[in-house]
Length: 422
Image 1 (spheres, rainbow, N blue to C red):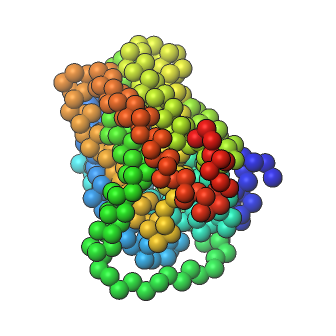
Image 2 (image 1 turned 180 degrees about the vertical axis):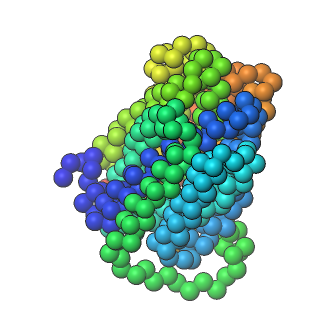
């Protein structure tokens, strides 16, 4: 089987990949429609930041508790429930928008609801990959394919969303998203599963949460990976929140322009994850994360100075590739070094790092952009990302010394000599 798609030989993962691919296109359609709707109704950078904050702040608060429950409960059942609830949330947006009664307040409330759902869905989905892929050698490929699936949807979703907004309006975007959830729910129900028997838990949630926090805060590789991903989410990712402002005020365009910008970023991210899927080993990913972090920072700096659509469309693939290669590589290392009984909690902290801090970044970006402009806000955020990349470059050799014995013990590398050049 082709090395890039080897994880698809696992039936359950193949079902999930197909269903989730369709659903994620709908999610990206909704994302671009929500941003455009809010900016059309208000013309406010601050409210764009507030809406982004509302959609993701629940993950910052709830993800650690959700991680404990993911380690306790059946992850498949959690996913079925979260996908049904997400479909209902999108349907509510569609009804309100199609009736022309939707307000920014209602968008914020429904974004909060979706954020609560995602707090449970994301760590459950990340942890469930291990159960769908029986051969652990295929796990890095499955994680990379997950990222490629997300980024393929980033290309299709905004393009379709831009056309739907321009021709039919935002309500039909939300409706298409609600319908798309049927695919992933059907794929989950069609899986053949061996019931996982989890050990009885006789400790309190707060005690388990404290154990998880101790694990991630005292294990240097996990701590460093979560910090670099969190910094990108806080200072780098808010560029996407400000994209409607760039499309409208800087590039003097409309929904199609926004779709082009989001698609350009998605093309780069897809290319980056296809590169990761083609790799046959996790060895060397530390260097990849450093390079991706530097590329992300450089791309954002260049994008902040761009005044032309064609130039922005050339630069944004670098940003998209850097962002996703950094996140997916960190995910792969985490999944291969953590203890199984801690997986749900570690993935919850990862979800916090990659998505939970984004609402804070979005809110800060909205406030700062109101004062100094979107371009300067993106520029200063990129400088923070660059500082983090240089810090990781210095720390990387020391972190590799922690990871090497784990990889040897788990058979990922045969001996110390096998990791020369890491």
